[in-house]
Length: 250
Image (tube, rainbow, N blue to C red; front, side, top):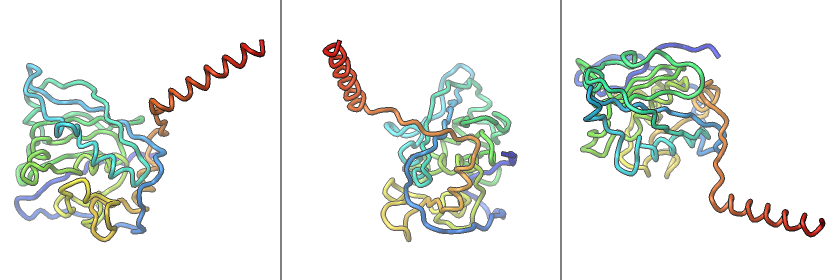
């Protein structure tokens, strides 16, 4: 698939900042789908030159806002798998970067790489995150994301930026996950995220046309669920029984 290389920024303007948005297509409602695809997110945490004072990885017990991210992308049948990929020790990048291009160019292949920083410089805004469109690579300002809404956190920023990696631009409906940061309705808890409880009021909706774009992304791989421990135990019992049966026949 041909990659469209550009960047999308999530900001909260301090002054009126004009921005173009893309009109969305079909708005057919889609609820959670069977998980068939997976996006692997390699997470690089930025620290200072000495490897200390590293950027936050999110709330305790909910690293990378995984609960919200998984619930949002379950609407598309996509599992998000976060993998710790080590640290980048750079004081300059920890608090002095201003763009995803400071960290990486657009990444090909499967999966994506996410850099977590403590701040992103923006002269007229609070810059929460930035990502390439239709290519891997994103950066998240965890200082601003964690502090949002009196410390509740900007729960959908990581999910939003991953949507850009998967090829979705900015629609004009505030209910949609992929609406620009200055427009989007931001959830304050997990229960406000679609598909709970009401299509007319839930936030971070992924309509059918945007789901189709995401599922066509080259970044995705087929989802292979890991068997539950009880499932493995049952397999072991079955194999043991098969072995006994063979011994008896012998």
